Image (cartoon, rainbow, N blue to C red; front, side, top):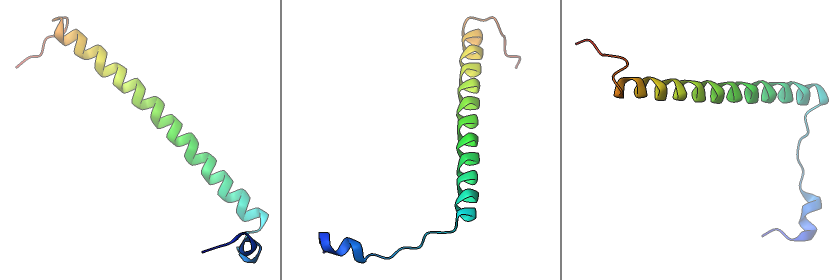
Length: 64
């Protein structure tokens, strides 16, 4: 296993600042997209609930 003294021996790669900025921009864009999709999901869920209520009380009739 790894001991406390081994932590300083671990090597890792850090991309240059421009690559980091591009990755950060991409992640922010994806985060915004996820937020927007969550908002849309809530909107359509409420829309469905309202339509179901109108169907159940007979305000809207389904033609067969």
